[in-house]
Length: 123
Image (cartoon, rainbow, N blue to C red; front, top):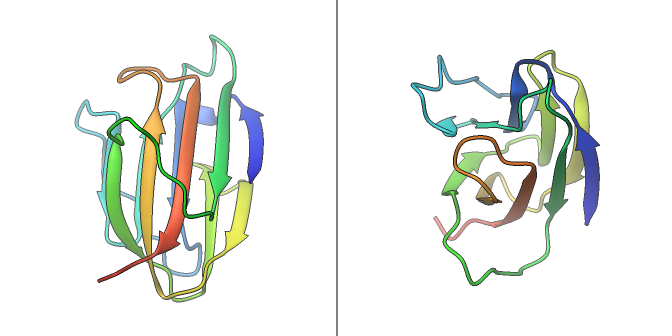
């Protein structure tokens, strides 16, 4: 498991294979927005402090319902957590060209804890 504490610009993190990631056009007031190649998630306001982010490729689970549960195209077999300025915060290798992404956040408006779990997609 990798982790980092970050106060990202615009209080948004992007989860994607950087070789193909197409960033969502906007958030539409939601915590999470996605395309087939990128998930954007809001964080604690960058002016209020840091957000603790974990990225894991283990086949774990949580008792709670994830904030996001979907599949991303990952043809480069790399999954990165980046700032909107394309600065890599965390990055792992993934086993398949389609990766299931589950995200848990401790707040639906401004989370300061975000857990990202990547696993091979059944799709």
